[in-house]
Length: 319
Image 1: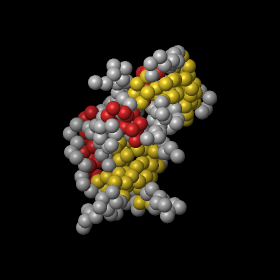
Image 2 (image 1 turned 180 degrees about the vertical axis):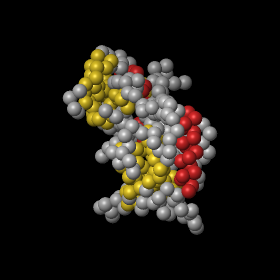
Image 3 (image 1 turned 120 degrees about the horizontal axis):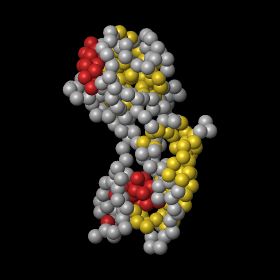
């Protein structure tokens, strides 16, 4: 039986948050995308662009179905709050497989008589000089949130169950630099020393209610699965007056990749496609940026995923 002082797991999820609003119907127009870029290989100094293409019938059919589903649910409003783009345990690393597996299982204990710092009030400081006052999580809660969702692999992968634990020997309040939807920020964080670990474990000392996790939106009700020749959308990384940049997920074998956009008066629906795959090959999942050009400035129009019907908000590319 595990000791009673084991830290429980807290679930940490990450992707985008939608909400709901209401808009009236509008008249659509379709526009063509500009070239986009695939991730560079070791031999590519410059990413290889995906050829642009007009909105194909399969995409237009999907976009019409998405428009109908969005109007039935109400156009989502932009999410509110500050969202965390970094890990809650920045710089996390381990010296051995046993340590990594123990962390993943949530088997983290505090040494008897260990002295922990106390919570209080401090601030999150942003690069532009602004700050937000926040309450500091106590060390145990911060560690629990940092562990997140667990998977017990102890006793497997040549990791003896009896040795599958990490022991915290001390904690001190420091700061960590993280990326957020409000820009780069310096955030209070607990630095934990761990028996047998050459580096500290750093866990943010701010509640997930303050630095919110990104949540993957579910497809809108009534939407059929995406056509096999259409591409799922990842992150929206840039939205200027007339251009949108986003990631498209695709296979290594998918030919004739294209990005598409359907413009409406109150929303812009984006997606992509490929030609049918012929022959056999080992498919590998890739994610490639694509940039589309709008015929009219974006303004306050919602950017909608053709895959899920969710509203997309900018998640900048972080180097």
